[in-house]
Length: 424
Image (cartoon, rainbow, N blue to C red; front, top):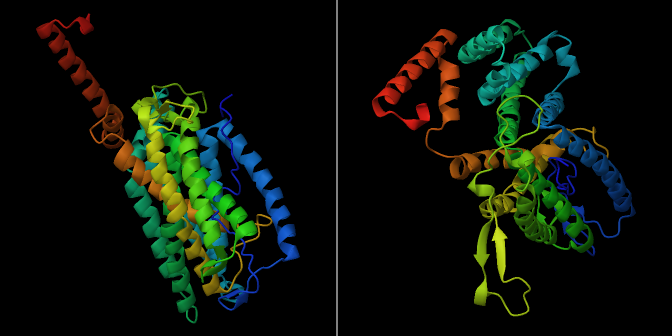
């Protein structure tokens, strides 16, 4: 089976931990902390029920493949944008501005075209390479993609200027700035998730899983052991939940990396937009290395030698970030909601709030996972794939064909001069 038994509690994909304090009458930030609140058990049941459904849906999408997970990310981005656009929306103002909401979505889909055009150009070209006409069309679109996106953006800018009306200037400029903040802090960051998916599902699934594990562990440790408030911004978060979740997340990172690293479905990069089975050489990162413990291990320890994949050591760094730094995405969201005097960004997920509530830490984690992969995992020298990507982006079909013919001539001359056996 594709998943190789890898599904742990992928509860509320994108969740940042929200643990519950149980103190004896202590207060934090002017609010009484939960002691034996009966409602918390009801809330826990609702959260668990929603979590089970989300785990099942997410597991199915991972089984279906990279393209379906990308579609899921796009849907999540649309829901997040909807929730955030509505925060500053005033119906009385927008009645005077027909079509103004459409302008927000114009900027959103322009950003989507630009971001995914940059991240997935190679995969798109590889998908249509068998069709000559479609290949030429797609290659041309990719070559001029930046100009097309800029033209769409500047048309939106002109559209905004033309819609300015007296008595709504302040509201319109506030909405304009708010739209760009959403695109920068939400869409741009979450788009790194898609880049991670096509680098190999491992680099999407492991970071996302660690955030979810951290959330669940913090919730459970805080629910049953929480005594000491952690931060005033979010008085229900506790030190017990934070520490317990950190230890759990780091250990889980090391173990999960070993389990996921055994499946080519997770480790192989996807170089097109198909959904077929993947086969590849996973590379040295996913090949176990032998470690002899010898005198280092106590006599009662059952194993004198262990096999560890190099990627497991990198997983510890991901686990450390997921448990210590990523929760600050949740703290940021908590402060943001306090500023707007709202409990949640939405109510689309029973017991959890809105999609944005579940994705705050995931966005922070996705960017770190991408940067970490590019800095420490991905090869820094020129690769065949990187060169092909530049050729597809910058050369026309005729220029590519000319390059192919010249390379053929050069290789032919080398064969004649050196009489290489590989040419025979």
